[in-house]
Length: 283
Image (cartoon, rainbow, N blue to C red):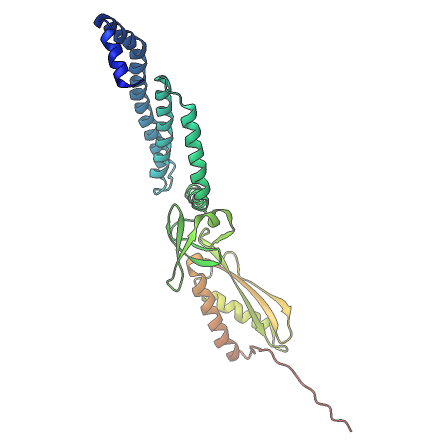
């Protein structure tokens, strides 16, 4: 029907009839509109209260600061979307087709951004369960470094030689990882060899003395020293000592140096691989 036809029909209508139709429309849809407005106002207030309670709960449970705005925004967005759908439904608007189109669009976007969404989900899991935190030293995805920053899509490591490594969170959240900073203490292991023919009791006593002289080595648990292997060119001791995590590498390197300097002074040999060749002359 074109506008001219509508105009011709309105000329034939009685003003009172038009007023009656408008009144009837107001009576039919007025309560729906008022109800929708009331539901929107009350629903918005409830959503604000829920988001506020969620924020306070995350503060009390010490949820990661970088995760709090995201979770609050996600919860608020989902609740508002549900409120909009409810209000439009109250006004008589058919939402089935709209929801179907929205779902199809979401599926297409999800397939296009599958890798990004995996990293996003991994970042959320890391921030919630906290397998590591900023400052921890971790070994993951073939890299060792200190965690500099945890982002929603990536985690940034700083290596000991000052390189920046960016790791996608999808692999970090689903793969294996070693966190060297979780515990306050760590065990330092050495394999120390002495020559065949050397006094084993003396070697053991020298190693024990060097461990006792280093105040960074903890007394409890006690240092473990034992003969572990009769190798090709040496008798190997296994030495295990516990230290504070921050002292791990310092103790490890200093003990190696002390062993090298002290053994010759004590008459102990530090063997190296060697081969004896016997030449037999035919008579």
